[in-house]
Image 1: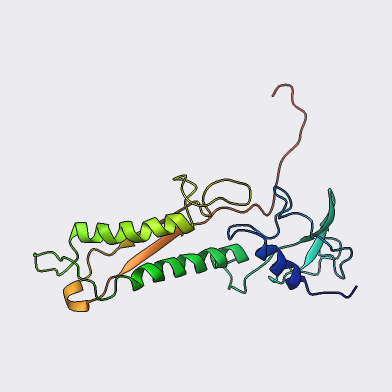
Image 2: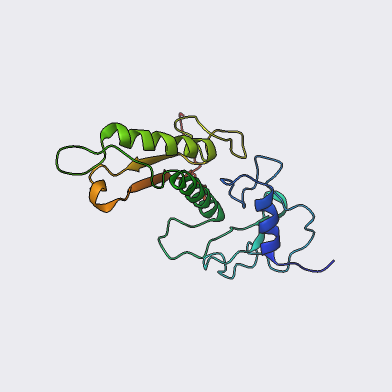
Length: 205
């Protein structure tokens, strides 16, 4: 059987999992863990660490306590310090962008009530109406683990992210700019990449 690039395994893993799944997850569901059908790998980043993972290059590996072959990490080509590290970060952000864009498209040329205080900014109930419309869609597509709403993750828990919020700018002069300005803030789920513990003998625990 011919060798195939590790990206093929990553793409297949992504196709079989929801957006919040870390494709390198080793355990917890049938759709993650050891790569199905992989019987041999050309480079093992665990036994032949060449610094490829540190350079954000996707590789395959084994684990001392697990059977089979695994994805080391599935990186995005982001800069140092970027919030867009792994594929799931990109997939979630893509869905957020599509969702907000769809709702915003429905608001084009609609009228909104503005304050009569000389600022030209949105009235509070107008801002809340827009927020409710978009937030409802984000909750349905991406969800929130902290608020217990939305679709389920690979392990069956609720919400693809820890939390997210859509908020309309209430200071913008809509009468002058004819523009609605909004911000979407997303707190992602954490993904465990290293585990550290201390073992010792004690007189009491």
